[in-house]
Amino acid sequence: MQRTADSKTSLRIAIQKSGRLTDKTIDLLKGIGLRFDDYKRNLLVKCRNFDVELLLIRDDDIPEYVQDGVCDLGFVGANETQEKGADVTVLRGLDYGVCRLSLAVPKDGNIQSVEDFEGKSIATSYPNITQNFFKERNINADTVTISGAVEIAPRLEVADAICDLVSTGNTLKANGLQELKSILESETQLIRTNKKLSPGKKQLIDKFLQRMDGHQQAERSRYIMMNAPEEAVPRIKEIIPSLKSPTVMPLADNGMVAIHTVIPIDEFWIVMEKLKTEGATGIVILPIESMIL
Ligand code: ATP
Ligand code: ZN
Image 1 (cartoon, helix red, strand yellow):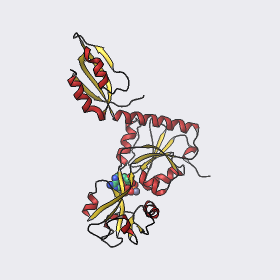
Image 2 (cartoon, helix red, strand yellow):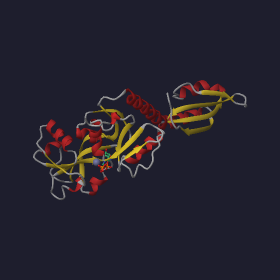
Image 3 (cartoon, helix red, strand yellow):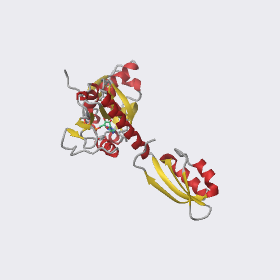
Image 4 (spheres, protein in one colour):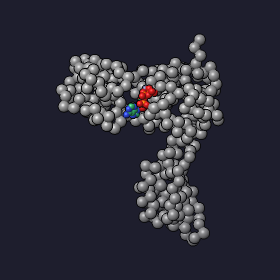
């Protein structure tokens, strides 16, 4: 019998060993209070204060490791999970590693639209996603699978076009290519195995998710403190899109109160401007470490 992650009690999480997702994923794990010893030198790292161990591997391998239950969870780009067609559950979408898988063609070449790909060849590290895209449109296009430096394939006449990950588009431009169409929008996701898990493991995953959600909500929020005229409190309460009703405390100054609350970061400037017009002073904004709602 294959020894899966569930034959041990600690939660095994796959993350990219070294690449674009590594630092952000480690920051996130540290942000929810997990502490690790040297993760740069080891393949399997035990967490010191949570029942978790990290498996550090290539991002391409993560979907299958999670699918097969070798790892319970994984942090990986949607592009990899889709390419592998892995049978896993996406638990959360995370806002890093954002990119798109795009068709790109030589500038001023003879491919100007998706239909022009008929009979052409495309170099890519994502043959399955690319082939599906063309199959759905009844276009015959060949894929040439290349694992790195896909963008030089047209110049080497290995293929007529490419299908590759793009974030800024600078690499394409530097190689005389132009982006024609995005065929997949991708971001990092937290994925979970669909293999049966023990109740203990399920509980650990719930605890892990609760911490992660609290941390992410906190990142999107700020703690705000201000002084304001007491008579302005009803109007200020309307301005602040607070999670719960704000804390209002009387100050030694007659007719003045201190107000403490939490605001979403998106509405930060709008709220600030409105508060000032209502006579709020001494406005202090603080970051929040985590929140449990
Ligand atoms: P590994 O050695 O782990 O296989 P890699 O070279 O395949 O590494 P990276 O270049 O580190 O992988 O990219 C990891 C992931 O980062 C991609 O699969 C994708 O989800 C995301 N990503 C975000 N922006 C880009 C981009 N511009 N180019 C490539 N990947 C990107
Ligand atoms: Zn990879």
